[in-house]
Length: 113
Length: 113
Image (tube, rainbow over all chains, first blue to last red; front, side):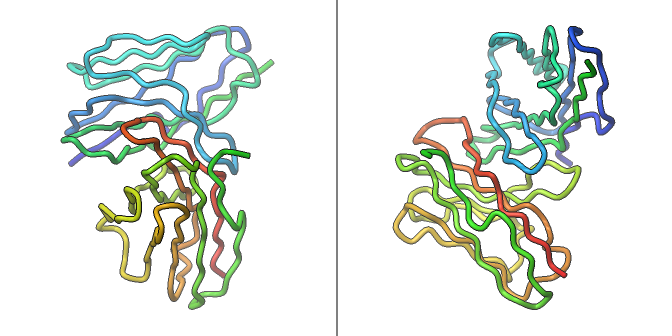
């Protein structure tokens, strides 16, 4: 069966450190993978997209890697700040030409001052 | 505000009642999606429209759920004979033509008592 796995346990880190979140998937062949941020009681907000033929993407303090052999994406936030505390969702898209992004359950990040 | 707008933000209803939610997407976006999200889970796809055509519905969507997008602009999602298991956040997202980035609304929090 198809699965998107994100760590259900919250990730606690100290301010200034690099946070690394993982998204693993099985039985998908996504054309792209996205990361979204979600704050409590609000809708997700798009952060980054990486396509299947790309290994790495950066945007300011964010970095995403995509390994289609391992079926894994890593999402890094460098120099983390308490304001980065939120839930981060990965979403797979373009599987079989589908226009329906499929989301993981998200991982909660808590950055301590 | 030119973002995706959802109304109401919160709805409390008694079991067995019908409810209707509205989503106003970003004006030039032709694709509109409905997702449902429960606590600790990622958004779960319900249905999507391209312009006024409903192109796909999740098999998880029971026949108590119906969605419309009559003129290819706003959309409504109706739940008939609500059950306690329908309690969730209902999210609407819109996409520009050919784009992969989802713009989400703030969601409608439904509580069935």
